[in-house]
Figure (spheres, rainbow, N blue to C red):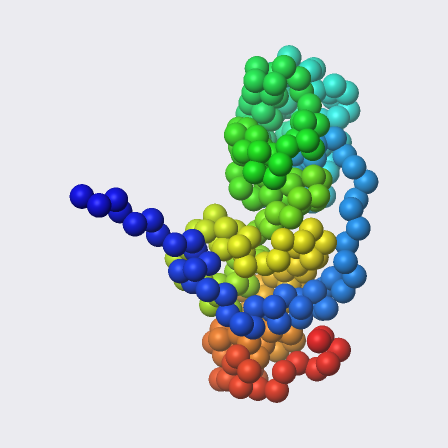
Length: 260
C-alpha cells in the first residue's frame, strides 16, 4: 500500500483571514501601544516555578507563595531535601489552592533536574535553540505547552506565543478556527500565522489577555465598547441589546482612527 499522506499543517487546513493583522493591530493600539522591553533577567528555574504557581491562581497569590518558598528555601536543594510534604506546608501557609498538586510538581521538577542535569539550574536553556529549550521545559513534571511558552517568551526572550484562556476565547468568538480545537491546536495555529518577532508577540499576548479580561469577558462581554466589534460575528449574539443584530466583518464603519 502507498504511504498515507500526512495532513497539512493547521494553518494550511484553516488559513488565517486577511483581517487577522487588523485584529492584532487594534488590540495592541488599545491595550499595549508601546512595544515591550525585556524585563530584568531572572534565574530561569525561579521564573519557571513562579509561572507554575500562577496556574489557576491570581498573580498576588502566586507572588506570595513564591516569596514564601524563597524564604523557606534560600537554595532549592533545601526544598528537594524537604520533600513534597514540606513544600506543600509552605504553600498552604502562604494561602492559595492546589497546594498538594503544585508541591508535587515542584519537587518533581527539582528531582528531575538533579537526576538528569546534575544541577538545580536551568541556565543552560539560554544556550539552546528554541525547540531544544521547549523540549527541556516541557519534559519537566507539570509543565505543559503554555507554561513553557510563557517562560520562553518573557524570560528567555524567544518568539513563543503563549495562548491563555482569554486569547483562546477571543479567537473563538472571532471564529478564526473551529470551536472544537484544543488549546494546544490554538497555540500551534497562532505560532504559525503571527510573525516571529519577539516584541510584537509579547505585546500581542499581553494585549490579548487584557482584552479577554476587561472586554471580551466569559460572561456579559462588553461588545458595545469592543475595538473588534465590526469584525466579530459573536457581537450580534453576545453583546448588550443595543449592539445585537449589528452586522460584522467590515459591514459597519471601522472603529475610529484612534485605534488604527
